Amino acid sequence: MELTIFSDEHFMREALKEAKRAFDADEVPVGAVVVVNNTVIARAHNLTERLNDVTAHAEMQAITSACNFLNGKYLNECTLYVTLEPCVMCAGALAWAQTARIVYGASDTKRGYNLIGNKILHPRTSVKHGVLAEECAQLVKTFFQQKR
Image (cartoon, rainbow, N blue to C red):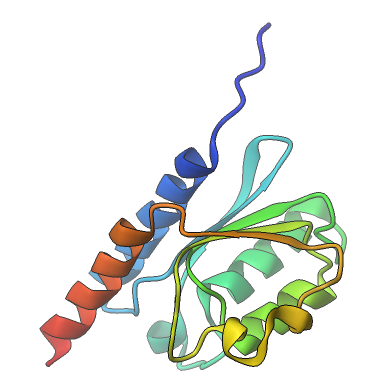
């Protein structure tokens, strides 16, 4: 049996599917998936409105789901794909989970963790940004344009 290796774009499209679910639920459209060994083990999107919980970001939901799947608290062999740059809260949680790799689409110039520098992440975490950035950004822009 031949193993298919999927690209970062493939998994970001999976995260975009989650972001669209959030959009359809009138949540800020951010989606995330956690991948280990080329397999999605967790899917999540923002649930802050539905749960009345400001901490219910896509990344936080994905971390919890992935840790439950793995039956452990560390994601040190996992990649998180998220459509928008994580905020400081989510970056801190990703650091505590020792996430191996973070791939995000659009930058968040107002609330992204890079505003304070990326020293918040675990030292062994690698980051890739800009994957399908236009698609990711457009979904957020459309959401907020409809709110005005």
